[in-house]
Image (cartoon, rainbow, N blue to C red; front, side):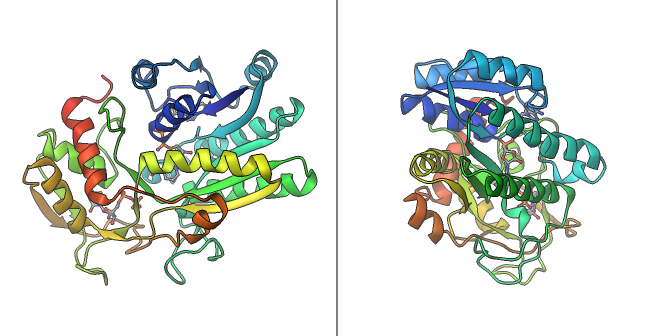
Length: 336
Ligand code: NAD
Ligand code: UDP
């Protein structure tokens, strides 16, 4: 019984693979390494004491999927493979739709051909768009404000239609909030290429001396201290949400759509303070203008996940910062 993890060499995927191996599953990672490094597989083995199978390849490669489904006794698929840059998606919309939407279609087609009907899909809180109310519940209107969010919503809708067409499907649509942190070993973590777009990796690079200062994108929002508020969730909590979803799908057919967040909002300044405490470093910062397209504030209603999956996030923001700092300080150049 093997679980196929597409994008399993990436940030969230690698942490999930560790937990799957720890839980006794066989794991096959399919990743084209467009945003990750092959060495992550060695690190996973170092942590878990077991090595996942690894195939470098693209999820849109139909022939390769057919070969893998014939060779391995795959019972379920966790589909992380996708592109996620909000900055890049508006410049390269076709690349994003092809990778995220076409990739998911090819995968689902080949799963059905191979009689594999259990699928966990990486969706995102970006499917909600401008908050009509907060916290976002799963019933909040869906109106993404960028191509990336559109691509996630399209896949959600395609998978809903697919499940309506054939009751064999068991699908979990997991809407992630802001994953941060790293495995407690310090061996794996987030390793963005180039200048990080996201707050936590940027902060960590300032603390380790790779960047001079953090630019804070606006302090005049109507939030607790004027800076942007997000629902940060420890990547290991997010990973355990996938195992909970697989357990749920063992018992339930159809589609389940669940927020994976903590339910708690944290401002940029609050996260900076937590990181200073965790690292013992002062973080140089400058307030600059708002980043175009940024929402002031959002966070999850996390109750549904607790009710249906029996899952809730355990780690607080201090732990997220401690683990991010351990990863960053032990690996100042990431996986390089
Ligand atoms: P990541 O870039 O670290 O991991 C994605 C992995 O998929 C990478 O290893 C990449 O090489 C691989 N990949 C991309 N396209 C592929 C393709 N066509 N074929 C095979 N492999 C491919 O990103 P992540 O943060 O781990 O995110 C995983 C998933 O979760 C993505 O689908 C992302 O959109 C979604 N998500 C991420 C966040 C976040 O803030 N990190 C939030 C919500 C949702
Ligand atoms: N942010 C910031 N400086 C940075 C990166 C992000 O002030 O260098 C802010 C951003 O405006 C938002 C919050 O930090 O309010 C989280 O941003 P991130 O890009 O990590 O997540 P997203 O906006 O995609 O939820």
